[in-house]
Amino acid sequence: MIYSLQGKVIISTPTYSVIECGGVGYQINHTIYTHDVIREKKDVFVYTHLIVREDAQILYGFIQQMEKDMFLLLLSVSGVGPNSARLILSHMTADDVMRVIGAGQSDALRAVKGIGAKTAERIIVDLKDKITTLGGGQVNADIGSAGANNDLLLDALSALEVLGYPKAAAAKAIKKVMQDPTINTVDQVIKHSLKNL
Image 1: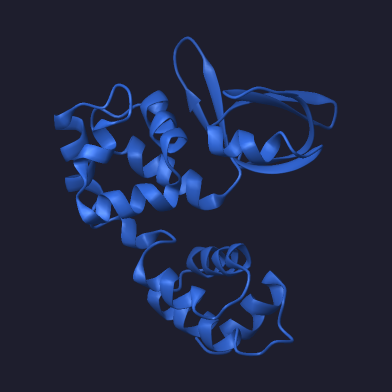
Image 2: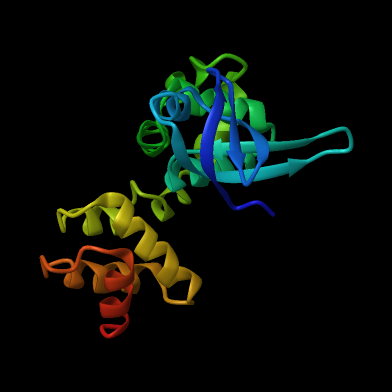
């Protein structure tokens, strides 16, 4: 599985870009949001998700981990494919999608081309409880109150989860660590958080 890519942007369009890594150009399909960030840069780092079908291998790229996580959650809903998930995340940011789902605003989802009333309701019902695991949930809201770089905090939280720590406990430890202004890297956050777990 290709987890991420870091390299030079050699082609950028609203729907896909080509990133050259080690002499190989990888075409990634992406949202409008990711394109808006990529087109302004020469070198980028993107999170990726590879979908393998009988007739194709399609690589999707995301400028933020949270956008990728929301894409994967949307894919878990019956009737929502990669293109529909990408359209939803092109129509609104991952934060907006979480707010819409949390508030049960199916009309906002129906505004996306190809998303009907039944699919919109299914997305809300299936994901309402799951969105708390993403950046808009209470756990990450607690972390955000530390006032530091959100990407740094989310990366540290993700790493601690991979190590097997419960999300709520890891978030509490990170929040405590971030009260120290001298701690400003992911490695430092993880190292000091482990002492509180």
